[in-house]
Amino acid sequence: MQRSLDYYETQYDLPPISNLVLGPGTGFEALRAGIAEQLGLAVRTLDLDELFDLEMPLAPDEQRECLFAVGAALRPDSAATWEAS
Image (cartoon, rainbow, N blue to C red; front, side):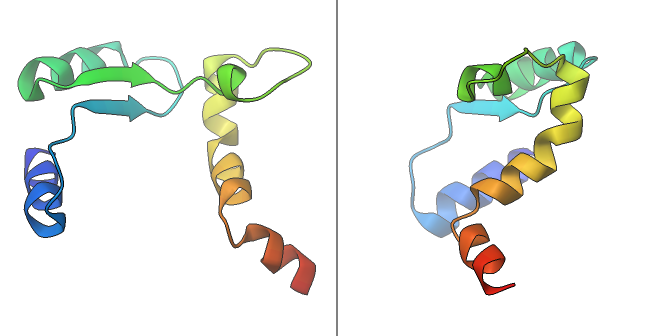
């Protein structure tokens, strides 16, 4: 992960990343703590309940199962793809 962060900074001439967002789900506490400790980043977990107005809150594992669909729906070209079908 450190190599990827270094590549990002050097190849794109951008400031260092200071925050990292992990996908939703349970069981990532050790990963989150390890990344924060080893890389010095502020790490948080994505919460789809905060981003979307949902009728019922989703459990972290339910959010994990929905993540690819949400990402595809948020792509800028997704509307054009559906209209062309």
